[in-house]
Length: 117
Image (cartoon, rainbow, N blue to C red; front, top):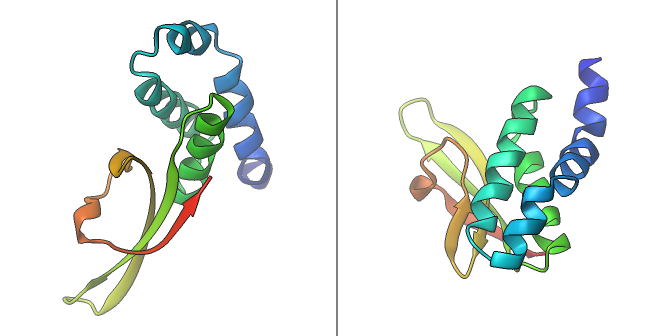
């Protein structure tokens, strides 16, 4: 069951978000649609137990694109000098404003890849 959630989670997230009438209403008024998409992705990801920042960021970017909003998927890395480990993180930016950044402090991450969706 967990495997199915992980594999099919992205499609489920997108379908559940796009089916919400509130997004269509907000698109017309163009108020805070980006934040509503992010909140819905987070909520649905929690329900499906999806923790991957990459999957959630990619889902956000696809929903943004479906509503005609521009964004970039950004991947960054950071090192922890205490335990000498490398960490990665993914987030969404629009006009260089960080929209979906997850729970991590992304200021410590160095951008290694920017994907225009």
